[in-house]
Image (cartoon, protein in one colour):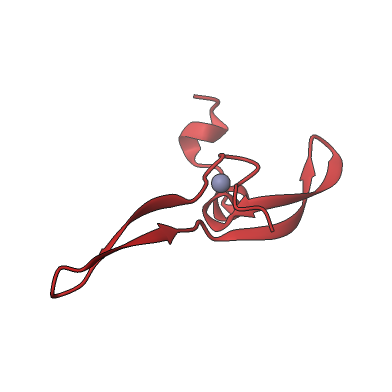
Length: 69
Ligand SMILES: [Zn+2]
């Protein structure tokens, strides 16, 4: 499974877990990537997209976006 969003390019990022006793261990944050069949420019394609992009694609355009600004 790909860890990267095909639309926005969001990918894993790294940091530290820090316990109460301040033991520092490495950890990774993964984006929530889902397989989806999307119609892009009239073509149905299987893509790996993050849930944030999926939500944005399903949302109705705002008044500003509908006016083309
Ligand atoms: Zn995305």
